[in-house]
Length: 251
Ligand code: PXP
Image 1 (spheres, protein in one colour):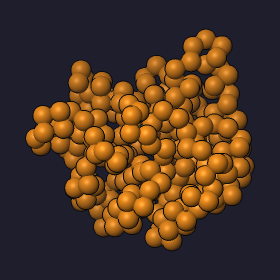
Image 2: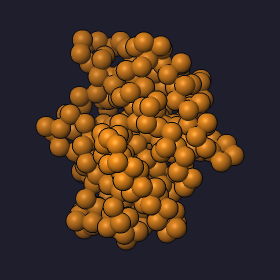
Image 3: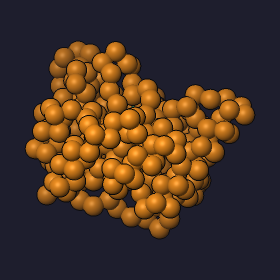
Image 4: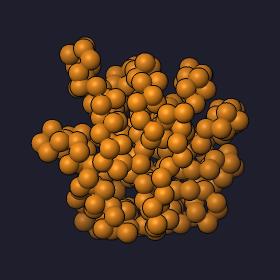
């Protein structure tokens, strides 16, 4: 069925999931149908992206409910649904059965997902949601800060995947950036050592992606805002291709 194909594998591969939320942000600015995030998903599929990521927010500021089924029907790429740990989102995920669900923290007033999920402090709230998603065959991931307590919490929740938040790394400069990179690299290794597949994302650009892409344990990067921004200047096709090339070059 469209949208449920397993991720494609390349030797020594690092998958690129493209977050198409901000195509919908532009569409919603005028309230019509254009630009359609489904068309973006089809372009990503055509130029070698490995997955589509979309965050259905509580306020529906970008992706909307009806977009999910349309995206699943339009491409064979696996859909990674980013979702808050709420009953409403759980019910939607169970209905659409995306390939993966990445549980993210969500605050209405934030402009983007600013920090990682406090998996360590919310075990009891997350456990039943993780369990229901896993029982439905959905690959569950937690979007967490690169912090050993969060990896430990992810192990206790028995999730197969964690996505390490690269926002601190992306915003840091000089020596601090090296410290943040080390944190991500150490936590990717710790996750992998404990049987959890590490992914990473947030704030990645052509300029900062390569040190992250070079971390050998990482299996997937999810990149959105920068790619959609670049697409304005060079087209989505060219932007995804260039990111893909930079990632491959760093491996
Ligand atoms: N991964 C997750 C879990 C996200 O929530 C987001 C968007 O906030 C991204 C990746 C992509 O981040 P960006 O749009 O900054 O590339």
